[in-house]
Structure formats: structure tokens, C-alpha cells
Length: 189
Image 1 (tube, rainbow, N blue to C red):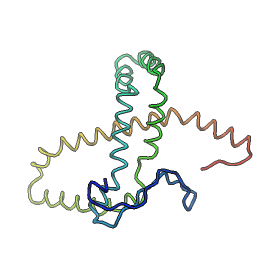
Image 2: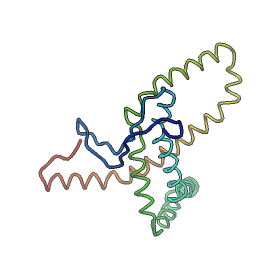
Image 3: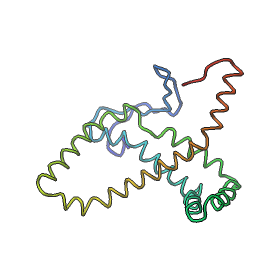
Image 4: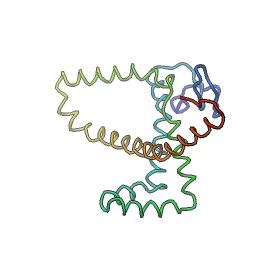
């Protein structure tokens, strides 16, 4: 994103490292100082790209549309039948892992979000001024549908992410608890 917006980049790392306070940084891209609009767009890149990839994996590779439709139309038995078929696919676990890994790392960091507040305030100010000057009907007619589509896409991505993380919650909880008891160490909070 930085290069698309003509912002110089420095160091790039995909190797996780521990930061102050015990936080884990999954990777980073150093960028030159720029205006807050481009800074906000660069900060949104992990969420936009990660969200698109998670949506593709969830909807196409993991068959969540079919699973959802089966659950809505045929109930739990129909959903279980689709699920049983899906988990026999030869590469399903690779896609599942990729969706988990990407969805776990696509949320922007605090430094990625630093320009979001000024951008959000400017957008709210523009919306407020548009409403004051009588553009409310035009906004509703021309922007409501695209805005709704963006929210629906976000809903799909977050729903897929939640589903994947809920599936893994119990096994990881049991693994963490077992490892803590075997080692005598309290593992992460």
C-alpha cells in the first residue's frame, strides 16, 4: 500500500518478535513520514488485504456459504452433513490454518491506527456539513447502498473469523491448561 501511495519504505520483517510489555509483533513495514490520509490508508492495508483473503478462504475454500445455507434451511443435521463432507477435502486443514493465521494477524496495530482518528473526524465533519447544507437525501440515495455493502462484507469477514476462532478455542484452552499443569508455569493471560 505504501508503494502504491508513493511513500518510501524502509525495513520489512515477517518474523515475529517480542516487544515491551510482552506483546508479540508479527511483522512490520517501516514507512517514511507522510500525510495522515496516506498514513491511514497504509494502516488499513492489513485489514483490507487480510479481510479479502479470509473472505475468499472462508467462502470459497472452506465452503461456509454452503454450510450456512444448510444450517438455515435443513438445520443441524444438514449442516453436519455438509461439514462432514468439507473436512474430508485433502487440503481443508491447510486452508483452515491459513484463515486462522491471517485472521489472527490482520488487525492493525496501534501505530497503524494512529491516523484513523483525524481521518474519522474529517469524515464526520464532512458528513455534518453535508447534512446541514441539505445533501442528506442525496447521500442516502447514492451512498447508503455502497456503505451497506461494505458493512456486509465486514460482517462476513468477522463472522468467518469468529467461527474459526471458536472452533479452536476449546482445543487450545485444554492444551494450554495441560501444558501449564505439566510444566508448573502459568502460560500467558
